[in-house]
Structures are given as C-alpha cells and as structure tokens.
Length: 413
Image (cartoon, rainbow, N blue to C red):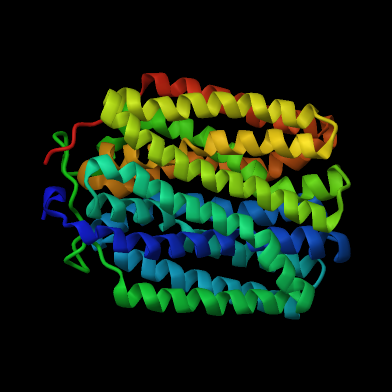
C-alpha cells in the first residue's frame, strides 16, 4: 500500500497517538514534580542527585533509540507502542513501590535503576508515532500531523506540574505513581485494541519509499542531511530538557516564587511549547506548499531557534517575574516550533528505514537531553543560572544555523 492510496479517515489515528504521547511525557516528567516538591526539600536529596536520576532515564532512552527504531521498522510501530505503554505502566508502579519501601541512599540507587529501565521502554515513543504518521498521511500533511502529536506530548509535560502536583498534595507521592501506572496500562489496552500500522492493516510496518533506499540501515549514518538534522535536534533537546527538568525548580527556588507560582509558571511555559510544536508543524506545511520542502521546512527551525536563543538570554537577565515568564514562554514557543520539521524530515530521509532514521536523530537529540539535567544545576551552582541558560541559548543559535545546509529527500509515490 502506498501513501497515495490512503483515504480521508486517516485523522482518526491522531487522537490515539496524541494520548500515547501525552502519557509518555507525563510519565517522564512526574518524577521532576516529586523531586522538586518532595524528594529534594523533605527527603534530603540534593538537586545534583536528582539530576542523576533524571539523566538515568535519558541515558537508557538514548541507548534504546536505534534498537527501537530497527524493531519498529521490522515489526511495525503499532506493536512497539503497545510494548512501550505497558513498560511505562510497570515502571511508574515500580517507582511508587520504591518510594514505599526505600529511603535515603537506597532510594536513589533504586530510582536510578527503575527510571533507567523506564527510559529504555520510552525510546520508541516519537520514532514510532512519527512512523505511524508517515504511514497514514501524504507528505504535505505529515508535518502538521506530527505537530499535533508532539504538541500533545508538550501538553502532557505542562499538565504534569498541576495534575501530578495536585495528586501528591492529596496522597503520598508513591501512591500517585502507582495510580499513574494504572492509567497508562489502560491506554495500552486501548491502543492494543484500536491502533494499527496503516488505516487498513494492523501489521504493515514499511510504507514510505525513497529513491535511495538500500538493504541496510547503516548507510543512514553517512547521510549528510540526516546528520545535520541530528545536530540541530541535539540543540532542540538540550533547550527543551533544560526547561522540562529544571523550570519548576528555577521559578520556585532560584527565583523564590514558591510552589503555587512555580507550578503556574512552569505550566504556562510548557503550554507555550505545546502551542509552538503544533504551530511549527502547521506553518511548515503551509510554507512547503508555497516554497517547496527545502525552503519551506527549513524556515521554521531557522527562525524559531534563532529567536529562542535571544529570548532565553533576555529571560534569564530580566528581573520582574512576569517579564521572565514572558520571555521564556516566547523562547520556548519558538524553539519547539522546530520539532515537527525535524521529525518529518528524518522519517523521509530514512525511506524504508524511516523509524531507524528518526531513532538516530532522536539519539543525537537526547545526548543533549541527557547532558542538560546534570549540566544545568552544576553550572547554576558554579557560575549562576544566567550562565546555565546561556549554554542553552548558544546551542539553540547553532542549531538554527545548521538548518541552512539541510536538503530534503525525494519521496517516491
């Protein structure tokens, strides 16, 4: 089956994938809420120790990325996402059990293990959802559809601060994780029953074809355009993970705004990211129709990442909290607009190995994500949080410039 034969009802898969992405990120970020509001202030765990726990997730997420892409290309993204959802559900339950039975140093050691395993199970999330979109949609609709999925992931992150924060206000944080695991398992059952690799087939892993398809995925490592997109995505992820893991701590502790305001501000910044992702995908599709794929897709990450770099610097230097919020929100919106063009381009550059190509890109991106949670508090402690944000701004600037060299792959009908 080719993309040209896909009928109109393809949009029915989007809410399903949005739910998967929402819960994937909710599971990922919930630990930062527990860390900022319970483990760091009440259990004597330092920000650096929590940073290691966050990075354990990201390290194994990174390690699992290419294997998950290969598996999805061979088995199809539907089955891989089923495995991922049940793995995340088990990991959240295990996080809660850890909190019930361990304390002090043992809880850190156990959380490093549990969150690391969760990171490995999370690896298929974005490559497999992007591959599903590639299978279901024509090329001129893929960036917009990807933008909606990625936006749902950002909304999941944004609402974690309030929803999970409100939950741990009412029940002990370990039981909150157990409840989250149960909800994620229900989503796994739903995707198992109604999801699919294509509109007409539950198991049909390979749909996209390009003129340069070869027998092995190894040749992707020599694809100059894919490597450039990967470098740019490194910068995107560093910027985003700086926000994901430390924005609530920054507002609440560094800026001294307290729990309620830090929750609100963290939610607003992350919602700006959600709007940025969806807007970036929609704008890119419109510009592709007007300017072609090379100029149309590249314009969004170039403008967005350069703008985000400037806004992050201005936000870190501002004094009034509302001004800080405004600049950081605009910067977050601008940089995350680059997400959907990155994913749509990687999938198409990979051809029949599209999920693997997306996995390679996401591996490079999550090197940035892996570094950000640890580097940010260390630089903040040594040089100040303005310098910690400045690193993200420099990387965003470089990532935007890289897109001037990216050329799209021709997709065969």
